[in-house]
Length: 272
Image (cartoon, rainbow, N blue to C red):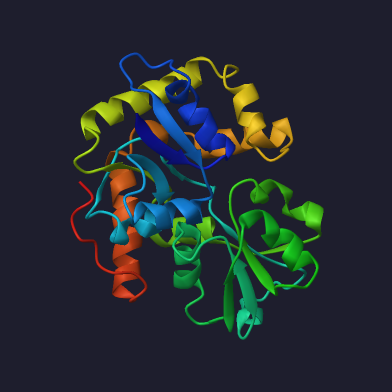
């Protein structure tokens, strides 16, 4: 049985519904793990899964063991992480601040470090992403870095958007934001076959958008169905079916900039 790990977020469950429910002809049976991106980033370092969803920011630690697949991941425009505070609008407030982040090997955190190079916080706390907004709201953290559906819900916590790192990245590079990647473990999964399976699952999801609704909501942490739909519409796009030249360029730009800044190691091998 092939092991597969991805997050319980709506974009992932929407994309992988067909593949994990026997709806892709020729695909194997899967042993599925649902895990936060920080868990998959770390577990993949040990080769824990045959196919796994990770942050693009984690690739420098993983490409010696895994191969990047050209589909199934999350890239896009207008979908970047946000920096939130209770009421501050000046980035200078981050100097000496405590900032909560969902992972220290996430694309979100890497973008944050590149953006905040002149306003280094005093402390970074890695916490589950669903605890970040409540923690900022109650004063546990001075600021929080949020991802996914938090784009649509942060106002409910009375929070203020200090920065949209996606807007900053796109203005700086003209490229989409490389958030989540799908990797195949070298020597255990045929990457061409895995690409075909995942693309077939994406096509099924688009052709039968209602088929996965119950599955998506069952894993969406009591998310409102309308928010789940917004989440899917934002993160499942043409790059999910095929990275293309722009997708690879975006990943290369992020990891090259980060390596030049000393934030990550250089890639151990090319992305393709």
